[in-house]
Image (tube, rainbow, N blue to C red; front, side, top):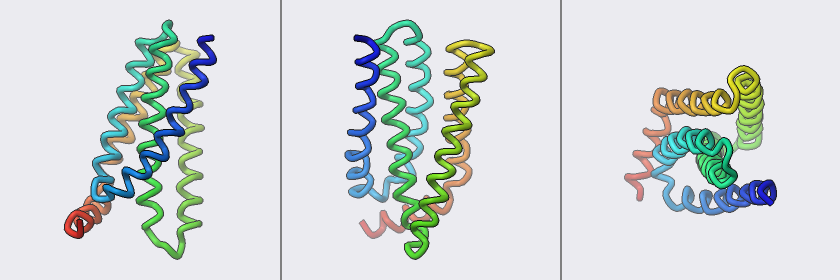
Length: 156
């Protein structure tokens, strides 16, 4: 029963994608903040997962929060990427999706190594660290998006 409930928690991520896409379409001038909030929530989700180490309810809650945060960041990133150069949209989207997949593979490899060495908490700390690294990159590299956002706010 528990594994079935855990598997069904993935439905929440799918639902978040469509509602997140509508949110970003409606509030394009909040994309930069949306990414930051999503990254913070992603980092916090690993705390919930760490607490839920032996309790299926907390594992499901943590997985739902993690999936929702990842989808929020992903949808927001796609919104930004698709506007970079409409003539090169397919190539840019391909590069983005390739880097997204490589990042996921790197995270899986690092968390597997951490789990082998330090157990469940080690894997959760890799998630927290990865989220913190992404948050730092977001803070340091968000200048162009913040400038674009100011233009969107002025137009809104």
